[in-house]
Length: 114
Image: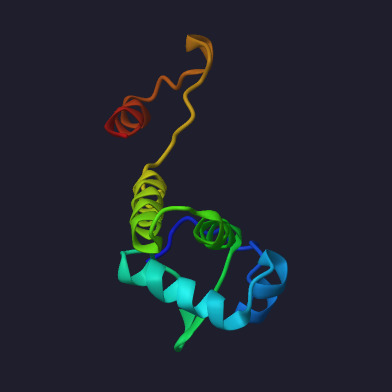
């Protein structure tokens, strides 16, 4: 499941993406199928793809490649996988100075567990 998409990120249909990227709507569908076949994940509404900005970038990369489409799609799927794995990491903020650090041992233990 895609965890790299923000809740307020704009989503686009195949037709909108086709107009944005300058390719035919059937070509958007074809590229989507090639990407999925090689491990790329899309958001879906039933059988319909829902595209976000990172997906549009992947389609542009396929459009502009000189390599075989499957090779580029594999690279894009790998990059997406790396990005998705990075989105699993939880970042915490640690105070800049010790004077702001909590003195409560339970809170310190919780902070250090992260």
